[in-house]
Length: 434
Image (tube, helix red, strand yellow):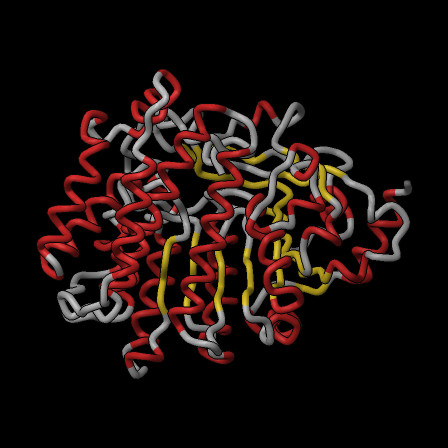
C-alpha cells in the first residue's frame, strides 16, 4: 500500500476551505438529503462547531431543513429549543440558557460557539411563521432522573391522576436518590429492576391525548419523549455495568429512534441535521467497531434512509482542545500533537497544509485507500501523551463518510463555565467519553 498514492489523490481532490463560498460544492451534494449527519473528531474543538454552524445555517435558510439534533440530553437541549423558537416565557440570552448545561462535560454545549449558533437560530426564527421555526433537540439517553421529573411535571398540569400514577411508578427509583450508578449496580446484585415501571409510563403517555401547556405547542411531544428517554436510559444503565457493546448499541439505537420521532413530528417533508462525534455518525461498518458487534447512528441512518442520509466527517492534524484528564476532572486546554504517522490525518496534512474539503468517493479507486488506517478520535477525556497507544479508530474513510472537512491546525472551543460540575462514574462510551 503506497501512502504516496493516497497523498497524491487527496491533493488532486481537495477543495479549499476558508469561506462560506467554499461550502457551495458540499451544499450541492448534501442539500437534497433527508438527514445530514455532521461529525466532529473531538468534543472540544472550535472549528468543528463553527463549520457545522455555517453548514447548518445554510441548510436551514436555503434548503428548508427543520431542526438540528445533537449528542446532548433531551431536557437541557429542549430549553434551548424553546429559546431559539422565541416562545413567550423563553427569556434571557443564549449564554444564559446554555449555563443550564451543568452536567459534566459542561463545555460540550455550554460554549461560545453554540451560543453563536443559538443567537443565529433565534434571529432566523423571529422572521418565520411558528410552523417554520427551526428547532434544537437532544438525542442522548443519559437524563434518566431529569426526564422522569419532566414527565411528572407535565402530567401535574395536563392530567393530575396520571401524575399520581407516574409518581408511584417512578417511585421504584427513589431508593437510589438520583444516582444512576447506584441503580445500575443494584440491578447486578439482585434480579429486580424498574424496567416495567418505566415501560408502563411510556405506554400510558402514548395513550393520552396531547394538550398544550405553558404556551408550548410541543409540550405533549416533549413529555412523551422524556418518557421514552426514561425507558431507554433504564436499559442503558443496566447494560453499562455489564460491559460489552450492549450499552453503546442501546444508546445509538435510542438516538436514531428519537431522530425518527422528530422527523415524524415535523411532518412528511421534514429534513434533519445531526451533530454528533465521528464515532457516532461515521458508519461503524467502516471501522473496527463492527468486529465487536457495535452499531452506530451513521450505520443505522444509512440502513434506514439509504441515499437520503449523508455523512460529513471532520478531522484535524494538530492544535488544541478542551478536555478532562479523567472523568469529572476540571476542563483544561491541552495541545493536540501532530497526528500519528500513517494516519488519515497525517496523509491529509502531507497533501497540503491548508484546511480542505474532500469528497470521499474521489478516493475509491486509489490503491490502498480502501484499507483501514488510523483516524483520530478525541473524547471528553483526553491525554495527549497516550497518542501513540490509542485515540485512533481504524477506518476505511471512503466508506465511513461521504465527505470530510479537514482542519490542519485547530483551536480549542471557548467554554462558558469556568469550572465543570463533576458527575458520578463515567457512562461507558467508545472511545473514551464520546
